[in-house]
Structure formats: C-alpha cells, structure tokens
Image (cartoon, rainbow, N blue to C red):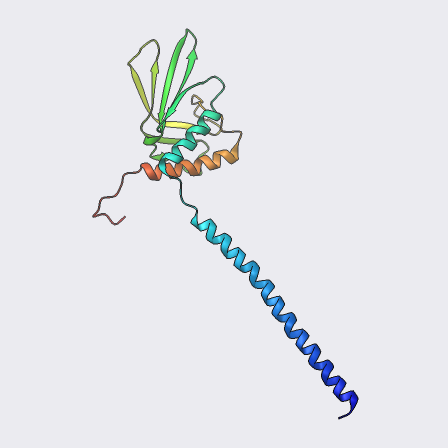
Length: 185
C-alpha cells in the first residue's frame, strides 16, 4: 500500500474511534439527569400525609394568625379553637370551634368556603353563662353572601384559602366514620 492509503486508514480509524468515544460520553451525560430526576420523584413520593393532630394544629395556627380584627384569641387545644368578641352592652360571646367534628366541606363550585359538622361550634354569652347554642356550619372565606358573622380574615389570601381547603378535606377524611371490618368501601 502506498503511504497515502495508509495515512487515510489511520485518519479514518482515529475519526471513527473519536466518534465512538463522543457517543459514549453523550450517553453518560444523558443518563445522569434521568437518574437524578428519578431520585427526586422517589423523594417526593416518600413524603407522608400529615397526621390528624398535625392537620388540626396547622389549621388552628392559621385561624389564630388570621383572626378577624374584632375578635380575641383565647386558646387552642387538641383541635378546639376558642375566640371571643365583645358586643354593645359589654356582652361577650365566646365561640369554640371543634375541628374534631369537621365532617363536611363546601363543594369547589360554592362561592363561600364553609366547613360543617354536628355541633361544630358552640357559643356562650357572658350575660347567660351555661347556656350554649350550637351550630353546624362555619364560614371560612368567600364573598359571604349569607352575611355570616366573620371570625377569620382568610379571603384576601386566596393561596392560603386553597391550602386550607386541602387541609380541611384531609381533616374531613380523618373525622369521617370509620368503616366496619365487613364493609368493602
């Protein structure tokens, strides 16, 4: 063979081996991000649901933060949120909301966000101690078309309202009646 042919073969072999090496490096680079993405997805799927107590405590904390201007925070303990308001004539009404009793949440198409449950809240007037009145619906946010007494000021913060809806839906599941052993669903 001539020198030119030998040189051409050497050059061709060199270019071919460089091409193979470049393909190997490209394959390695593309597989690494996929592995990282899988790791991130695995980490996300491992996050667990909050417990009932954690859910109630988070909601109670947000209730305290966003208490309406004319309300006084009294206490929060084990899912029971207590607030008061003084009306004309120095009559104070103390309202207790028991998050353990939340069994309903208004649907997503409702203009007002309301949670419900049997004896969800109770109210006691200072001029009539021991006399409790009970209610089953609690207004959380919205345009308040039914002119409900507002305990919290969540409406301006719609991102928080969406998070509250998820938290109340989770709490509703925790508080719903448990199925018996013989029930399938």
